Amino acid sequence: MSHVAVAVVGGGISGLAAAYELHRRKTPFVLLEKSDRLGGMIRTDRIGGFTIDAGPDSLVTQKPAAIALCEELGLAGRLIPTRVPRTAYVVRDGALHPLPGGSVFGIPAGLGSLAAHRLLSRRGRLRLGLELLTPPKRSHQQREPEEETIGAFFRRRFGTEATEYLAEPLLAGIHSGDVERLSMHALFPRFIEAERKHGSVIRAFRRTAAARPDAPEHQGPFRSFAEGLDTLPRSLAAHLPADALRQGIEVTRLTAGPPYALKTAQGPRVTADHVICALPAHATAPLAAGVDDRLGRLCAGFSDTSVAIVVLAFPRAAVAHPLRGSGFVVPRVEPGLSIAAATWISSKWPGRAPDGHVLLRGFLGGTRRPDALAEPDANLIDTVRGDLTRLLGIHGEPVLARVYRWPRANPQLNVGHPARLAEIDSLLARTPGLQIVGAAFRGVGIADCVAAGRAAGRAAADAVRSAA
Image 1: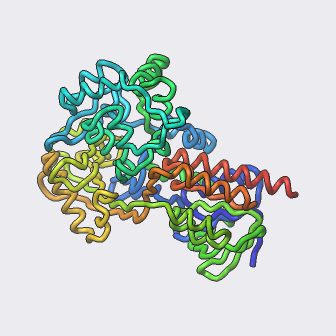
Image 2 (image 1 turned 180 degrees about the horizontal axis):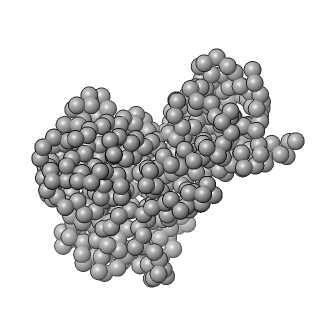
Image 3 (image 1 turned 90 degrees about the horizontal axis):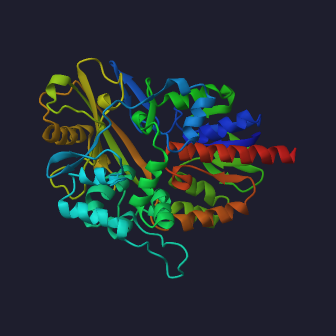
């Protein structure tokens, strides 16, 4: 049995960020990852001149943690923005309708954006505009707004049509979740704060835009790398001591400490004074249960969804649509379509396809189609190809087709998540040396995972130093 000051369980972006912070602070650690690859859902394949991000494809500039990490790693000069135009579309009545410029998730920041909102009917635009006159909702204590689902919040402030054609595909859809279950407070606190401080979301967005007239919006809110997004985890791993990164090691049991005992499926046992668990909630639960039954049950109570991403490439001449933009989402109320969204990869990012070709990817699964991953690859390819053909006017055979399956990969931060997380944190406060991070707990985006991982690494390093 080997002993180490800190054990990091999980080699996704949260675990790598924690390990990076430990290394920066000269704290001995070992990172244990059950697969033979680091990076978690961040994966890039390079096939025949095509560069394919199989999971997330970008970093957001609004949350600085991931961009700041890139700067520390010397990657800032390699970050690239999306290509112009950056128009996103929503399907309605079988046609693609562009979201107006100057809007946030389709919510206008000005009258010009509202007037250009052709996705919504005249009545829908009028109801959306009346949000300016809709009073904030207060709880029965008249102090803080009650926790609401995304659907409840949007219907109350923007109406049913905006909920169906904006909130469901754009806010719930990016999490592959149910608009009537996902927590507005947990996922989009910006909207809650806008209502609380300004009495109106539109008014808040308008003031923010007015206060930053010179904001570099021409660069867009997303960044990636010419070589694909896995440039980030690969660079992180390169900055870490190779002997501390142990792949192909699955931790199957965690025994209360400190010191904590970590049993592995491969046989070797590790003990550690501090453990940072950076796994999905369903994988965290059995380990947490070895320390505290209640903690294990709380982690097991999180829900998640699965998604399949189908990537197709065609000769440019085979696609009738101009593909001027980044892609589209499909509202759940739209009949006859199976995909939830599609990205025009070669239009969104430069250099992702050879000249004369386009690269597209479609999304299936989530709460909309929970059984999608049970279907064979050929069925999934045919389904996505059929929907894209209908919407984009495609003819001929794809020159490349790939299916990426992500089982239980999308944590669902449903109503009740903040309270559940608060209880987990209360138990962890009474469990010295154990920390839990990851998308299901501290935020689902890459920036949130980086921030939480680094915070955990700092806390463990400080504790080790204090004990020395």
